[in-house]
Length: 495
Image (spheres, rainbow, N blue to C red):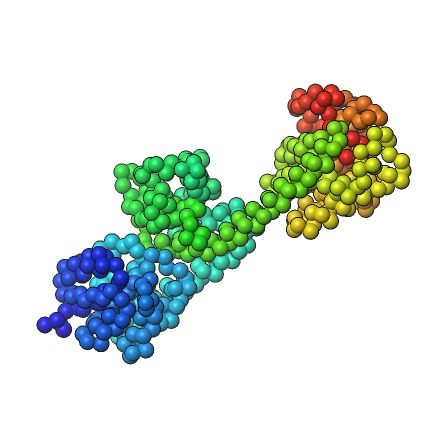
């Protein structure tokens, strides 16, 4: 009487899982289970016995689940229900499976109740009258349209990210939006400190805690350690949670955890995993680029320090000018990106002096007009050096134009007023202050008060009046950060 039962064929190379699935299926009234450890054995059973549905693992040695699915359809089993089992359902897998007639997905790890629900749904669908089958098909099509809409939105927003931090923010925003989550936290893994560090979050009150990997009571810790997603129900006053590891080429880099009052479902896991899967190669590219970028920047900084070390009067000049420029930018309320541009360009603003002869650069007396014309070429040389390593346009412009003047009498291009890049105007004030308060062989340094007076008197002439005033206001609120004596002064008038 086997023909009267709903016969399910289990195809999986994991012997333990296959046996457990068989026990669950045969415990359901009216169901019977066959089992196969690979695709070839599955096809043999299918040809021999009346199979109503197949539970098919995607990743198997020999024939993969998709290959078996194609062979089943090619053999004429057009209406046979095939349920794919997979740990990470990518959109590519989903599209390929749907093209070949997959009926449904079970996302590992799944509960036995979820398995029963899917099998019962498949059985009920086969017994539906024509009009109900049509309605079911319409619902399926609507679901697939929604999935394609999600895919387009996710791809568009992730690829518009300009750096890895913006990418992490989009991961959190998209995940929270498409799962209607109340809280979303993206963590980065620090293996050395054995902890998860919160990188970006939304909806969370305050700052999320750093999570020690030694603890086992947080879902994102389990997800990262086990490399598996977890869906946990609301309990003991806590919200429902969905935790998914963030992996790049099989290596765990962090994890995403979502919280809401209502339970999470497989569809939420699918969407969240899709977002992380799409973000992984973008994150890899950003991390690789930033690593190369930082290595090049460090090498150039070392070159600048070597250059400054030749002259005791210019030691650590770039470091101090950068710090001054950043403090001024922060006081003016500039964005994080603008401050980072100043940080990079500030350290390298005098890199062009590597192209100037030492007899001019290290001359212990005032420069002749001819020598000064040669010195004036260093911003152009610096911009060319930095431009060739792929720094962003803003950094190149800062380096090239940090000696321009508001009245147009600066160099190298004689730009005036707002023609001068705004960040270059900020660096110019910091650079000039450090030059004036530095000891040179042919002149003593100006005092802090004398230097501020010069900046005040040259606002609207040498300096952007708005930037100059902001610099004066900054010092009005602070005590000078250093004593201006010959032992701690740096840089000269040709800085």
